[in-house]
Image (cartoon, rainbow, N blue to C red; front, side, top):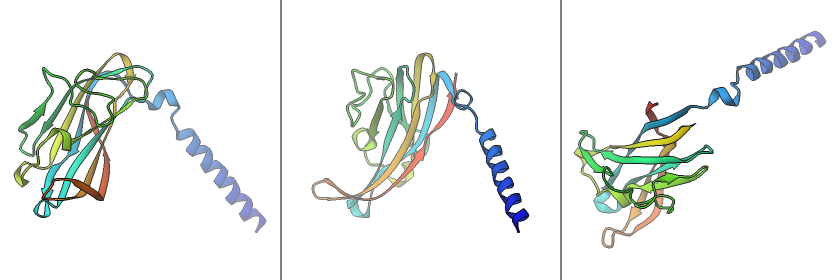
Length: 180
């Protein structure tokens, strides 16, 4: 019995050592780049006779110690048609005021949040779901832009259009499709 307990303890210590050894150190586990493109799933539509609104909050995060510039924000519908594009203009105002028409740079450790409620109209079935594309750059190699999309469903008063209490939410990471 004692031998079995010792072998189990030795096995546990050995397996913990393997897990620890398998962990990359901080410098190996971080993706660095000077520019990139991130894609996120999103939505913007009404259901239930207008009494339920579905929308997406895009959260852009600078996890690093150097500024990241958001060069362009675009939305595409389900058919691939362009719905919105900031090319040649400024960003829409972020919900938290961090980015907007006069400022497209995320300072170190800043997070900006954009809502499809503020940017897009409500789309019919054949145009959804949608995709958001964020093009970013930096003056030096930086930790890549962190991005996530939170789909929200809220009760809505069809008469006034006021968005009321939340019914559900689902958060998903976005995907880098280009890094340089």
